[in-house]
Length: 287
Image (cartoon, rainbow, N blue to C red):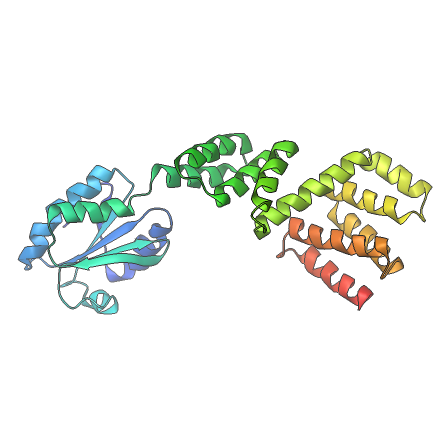
């Protein structure tokens, strides 16, 4: 039996999916396949259990008695024991077989413990929508520890959520120097452009008044659509842009309206039913 510990537990075949595979989406889970009659297993157990306890929740240890769970051992391809398998995010990420020296074992486990940067990054992503200011602080911590373009994109997103468009734009401009932008960065760029256009047109009320006062001015209709998009009135924004794209098909304003619709598709999200609806409408109108 596993020692009394919140991070060490015994697992049976019918519990494996929930206790190991699912849990590994939150924290790495080490699975120790052992038997009470296996002397190397009994030598390994206290070493690996102590190391997991020292990790204080950054690792979990699931112990599988192969005598009681032969079908699970067979399913995992265990032919001789001890076998230790590491799961993370639902997948096997590493393993070893047999009794290895304590320093090698600790080194192996150390590679599985999430780094300070990885922990801060996960916390930041969890807070990105609900508390972008705190997410920003954590993302800046990550950049100090392990700089990456991916983290910069999320930082730009956190800044955008706080209406700090100039700072977010500076990050996107820095990334664009590479000659490309990831889809997530392109979405942020589109949002920034729409916000800038909406601000130039004086906001939704002024943009609507201007568009209604000059219904034949297609540029003002596009400005109105940008203001509507910034105000999350996505359906009306799509309708406005679709009308311009249809009226001026092949023309300068029609092409710009089409481009703005494509950008708004990215902003709203490819999985949205609204996006699917207006992709079809745009394709019908143009082709």
